[in-house]
Amino acid sequence: MTPTTSLQSIDLSTRSGDQTRVLITELRKEIISGALRPGEPLRQDVIAERYKVSRMPVREALRVLEAEGLALLVPNKGASVAPLDLLELQEIYEMRVSAETLALRLSLPEISNAQIDRAARIQDDIESADLRDFGALNKAFHRTLYEPCGRPRLLAHIDGLNDVADRYLRFTIKALDYAERSNSDHRALLEACRKRDEVEALSILSSHIIDAGEVLKNYLTDFLGNEGLGEG
Amino acid sequence: MTPTTSLQSIDLSTRSGDQTRVLITELRKEIISGALRPGEPLRQDVIAERYKVSRMPVREALRVLEAEGLALLVPNKGASVAPLDLLELQEIYEMRVSAETLALRLSLPEISNAQIDRAARIQDDIESADLRDFGALNKAFHRTLYEPCGRPRLLAHIDGLNDVADRYLRFTIKALDYAERSNSDHRALLEACRKRDEVEALSILSSHIIDAGEVLKNYLTDFLGNEGLGEG
DNA sequence: ATTCTCCAAATTGGATCCAATTTGACATAT
DNA sequence: ATATGTCAAATTGGATCCAATTTGGAGAAT
Image (tube, rainbow over all chains, first blue to last red; front, side, top):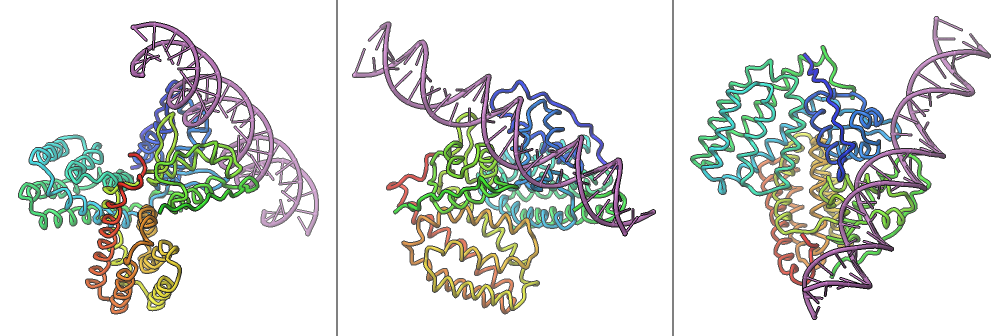
């Protein structure tokens, strides 16, 4: 079942300062959520008209999205939503392990109990809330644990990786019993953080991310025949 | 002694397809090399006239450079070259260790002796060539060792980190006996790669990068008073 | 029927134009 | 002398216009 969220049109024509900024975040959301499907062409006219702006800020936004790996730009041909690709998925999860264990390691000496509690409360939400919000809440949980590291660039990098990962997650999340495993991982991770047990926390986080990547990969491998992932 | 390379003006006005692409790479080079100084304002008019194009491709290029962390864009105020900052330097080197050890680990099972030899030849060049090319050659050396990992996204990420790191390197490279230490690290790294000794290779690479970061930090700490690093 | 050519429509890339915001200088008031 | 207000110049942001490239289809040739 493909995500079939309909595209909303926000009227940015009134806004003064920075339409490009808004466009970037809106289009990013639409690509991550799957409202804009992998491989789908992104025509400047269409987007411009949908947001009631000229093509100019659209073009700037598309450049940025390309730099983020969410769009593909071919000179004189146009832009399209970056296709999904199992090799990229694997790569993203390998990079997540590397970047997020670094963030957690740097965060642990700084993190307060209050901050750990904040993460625990997000985990409560995850377990009680609608699975549709899993992506965003899951991201928030992890980010709360990493933020005390005080490395803005690293955190931005991790955000970007999670954005891309979310695209894949979106296709599968409903069908999985993955949530359960993820929840127990999260609980164990919080416990290790409370004990400030670096080795344990990093080990849990690593296998947590690797696991998620494996589950996704297996699920998507089956998927691949049924429904395209966007042409390469 | 600040880099005082003069700005060359390339005439892109004839090129058909994609002036923005060219602008991005040219401006990137100028920022990395220090020809465009940290904190220096990047006025659209000036750049456009220098490259004999209109402001439009300049604006697109600036957006991308902002996404890469090389430029700063303030709405309605304009762009400037991203300032240098010791905390960022530290962060970049932490991220390099994390990303590059991952790349090397994934590369080692794939790398051929011929590829290792290619890296060794680059190291020969480093030791014999002008120190001014150190940044580029050093980057090439490392990339040669990582490339067999076959992870395009990871490699692009590493390239980006090294671009930013080069900006700091550029300020110091001449003044250091760092080259010697770096050379012996490189030789030892090649040896470990030849033996396919993962633990040894990763350990050498880690301390190699950490070392470089420390040396840079110390050097720049002294520097900070004399000559600005661009206002925050 | 298939392939090739050519031309019009669609679409992107770049330049120019106009509006809105910021900057800085000068004048004025305290 | 310093601070404040005002207005013109500079600069950015957005829209429109034009050129260049790509796309797709009709028609001709084999």
